[in-house]
Length: 70
Image (cartoon, rainbow, N blue to C red; front, side, top):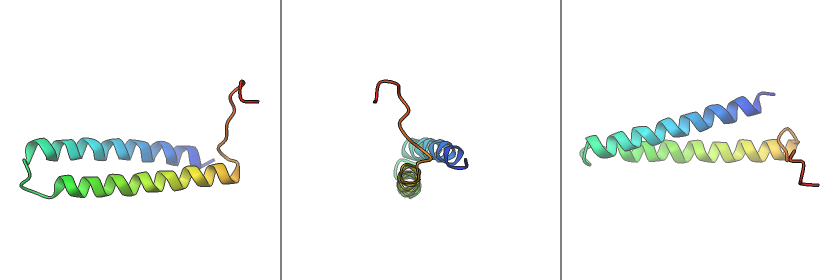
């Protein structure tokens, strides 16, 4: 029950990290390490997202429920 909201929150956080990295890339022009830190945060969040999706598929909480996939 908690898995789908957690995945949704992680996707929102990944998008926020992406926009902050874009901001640092355009505004700082390489004078700070904001872009690198943003990339590290984004990669860590993406790894956590993959772990949560794998856990959901393993436990059966997430699954394929399309009508044509019999």
